[in-house]
Length: 359
Ligand code: PMP
Image (cartoon, rainbow, N blue to C red; front, side, top):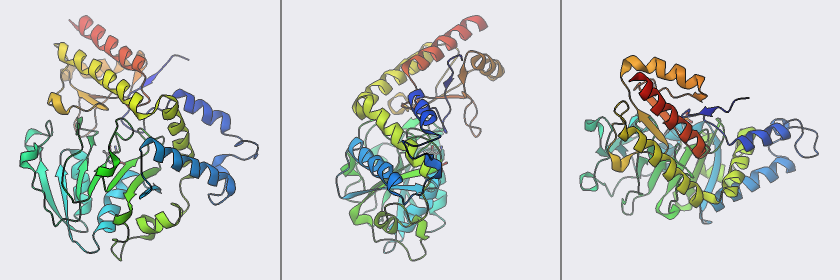
């Protein structure tokens, strides 16, 4: 079979060795005679998978003991609701950075429950920049400050953790978790859907600091209640066991690659190459200010009339899922951890060849 490079924003490509492992494990996990899909989440066998996954995650993200790691159904959007519900028993005001399509979606969901204030917004630039710190309005009375670390649709990424003082910092890292080193202790809560850098859809990861538990509003649904989920090992309800198992395989793969430090080096190299090729071309362009460009999602444009042909020919060359998000159009290459450098090289070579042939 010809090698295909999948640039989808999510669900996105898995490391091929992980897919091979899943295939080998599928009919029978170890010597049990049953697959992971068929086993009780409360049994000893899944218990081992669950604990190893939690321990590997803790090690890879350097989470001290006073952080809980939860694996919850519902992806990132479930957390858009769970976060305001869990953190506002005593404070009714929350604050959000508005830096792109996913920030807006998180804000809209929070507004159903609490009053949201905007710390700063880059909407005036059509989300091609990030607001500079001197424009941030940090409110010390807020329950938390939320920001989207990487805007998957707009291709904008915070390059550093924002300094917000003593207020709990909450971050949506759905599209850049484990892609770069972070200092976990600067965060109150981090969350991410699994289907980009962590495996397959169906699971969300929440890492929450001890002192933020016990702040849930009375109406918080039991399955979204962080305190109950922390007490019950993320098994208040039946968790998506297969997605949890795949997450475990992806974490093993990250460790084999040399951990987040090594992965980050590769991500820097991959993104630099692709942006350099776009900037050097007369055909393609990327609208995002250079200092805040995403390492994970690279949106680019070419003249509208050429777009269909580009996508058709790219697909024929084995470069798939390069359409931009339906809300913004254009093209987008998502180059998460699992995308090898050869995939980026193949895309660049195709783009350069297409440009030459068009001229
Ligand atoms: N936040 C970000 C940054 C995302 O990229 C996405 C999905 N693309 C979501 C939230 C929503 O994730 P889910 O579909 O898992 O709810």
